Image (cartoon, rainbow, N blue to C red; front, top):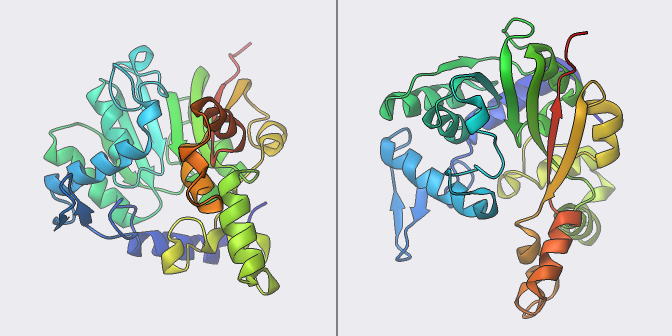
Length: 300
């Protein structure tokens, strides 16, 4: 399931430092299109940049937002006000900021220094407290049993040793504490169509790339020939390997991208013709993201 050691990890860190997740027109770009269709460039690390990046990221995840704010249908903000919350793989700091705004005591780490710098700038720009550090998710610099809630969004499938990273989340979590992790779904419509069919079969990339290399090259940053390592997981791997140390494990499939994939498969039809109920059912089964939650067993 995972790759090979420290050299690969260094390549992953460097690639993401050079291609940060800005949510711009291109991977790493600070160009955004406004509501009038006008392209604007904002300064990297400015308050305007964070606002524009958030607008785009929020728009991709509309079903997860609720009355309590962005991602409030996903995260249990209310139950963890004043509690210690850790994000592993903070990127540009969007989700960590939501937790800080909701009153949590936030810590956030990332493997690459650009993400750490930008998240620190974000917290400073918005006047928010937070403990932001450069750290490896496979070796978190925190005491055992020190957080009430830990989470990671779309990051640990880029780790050479995903199971080890998930194990460190469990280690730093307090007994009875909760965890949430989003990982890409190998048995998804997006992966089957874009990676395996279009790139692997039609473009014959699978003649010289193995399955892990193919997934990395054509997932995040595909137009930049992809990142060094991405390996989507299956539900069975989540239960049998990654989350086997947790209680009350639940897996929810998220698939906001399913409509656009169908539009490529069935031009002129797809999401425009299929009933909303069918699209939702397909998303729940074949979506690109698995949202996995669990609880650390209480001390006995």
